[in-house]
Length: 143
Ligand code: ATP
Image (cartoon, rainbow, N blue to C red):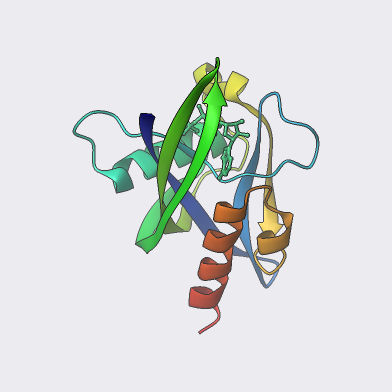
């Protein structure tokens, strides 16, 4: 089976006194399909660096690494071929920038961006693995 390796970020900040995370709706997905920013790891690239880059490209915000959250695994089918995918996720703290200030060359990848309440993210995110990453971030944030 073809394999694919990506990395992504859970970017957390406080907004009006409550923790929120940066979520995207990938282009082509129906309303309410919330996902975490992520992308393919370039050859030789450190996963954490990939995640920071993808966060900037897909959400417009700059972030600071906190710690690794974990890896998620899934299989999807593309053009009749099954792909086994591993995505490494990192917990990041928001540093600068406006959510949605996406570089024009990446604007077509993202339909919508939003700060989701961290407490609700484990329920609002569309994919099980990503919901688990949000739950971990919530755990770390509230201890
Ligand atoms: P990347 O963001 O890593 O560059 P991509 O956008 O090319 O990747 P994916 O986001 O992996 O590709 O999406 C490929 C397929 O897998 C889509 O049908 C998507 O709905 C599905 N998918 C995405 N994330 C998950 C997940 N965490 N669990 C299960 N299926 C997922």
